[in-house]
Length: 276
Image (cartoon, rainbow, N blue to C red; front, side, top):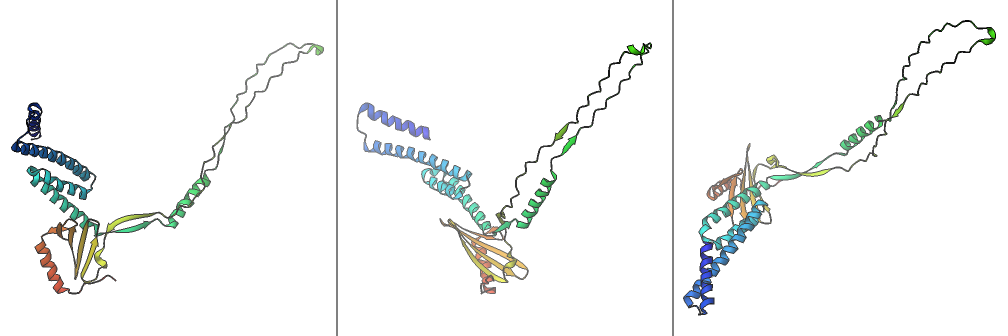
């Protein structure tokens, strides 16, 4: 399609530049149509690149808006683009629907735990004193001195035997272990970390509780029904651009079912319960 329109546009440009004859109104209209089609195809490509990048980065709002805008520039793929927009609307509704059923808690590591860690490190450091290792003395075997028989010389001419040198025994090697490089113990501040956990609905009273949560691009109405031992959670998600989705215990339901069941519980529990 792109190649065809490009060839036709080039043909019209070549005609006008060669013959220097002004185009008729009909030809001018066709030329304007071709130029508009080429511009639309270029805009469509830009929007699709933008939408795909946003989807990969999980910026679903940006992706949804870009896909929706691209419908205007490519009517041939309108149904496909509409389905992508609807899929993103459902995906975002499910994400934000689950978001309101989670709460942030502060996970704090107690100071006592940190003190125990520091005490244990100090005990280990105190046991790492430098050690002195003494090498054993070498065992030197005594050499047997041969017995030499000599004739007795006159007393005045006794030949003195040369004195034997005692073996030199080296001092034991003293190997000193390196001193441990231990840093002074520092007690760190308590570590606070936000952790998202599933909300416990047991804290809600019996009856019907109605809440609304507002986000930048969405709003969620949550109705919690405590009916004896049963707990039912209804949610109604509205997107900023007008999409509406209904859920019962995280399962998508129709607007008719949602309204019918909620109306029944409103009659049974006309007063909205409030948390203590």
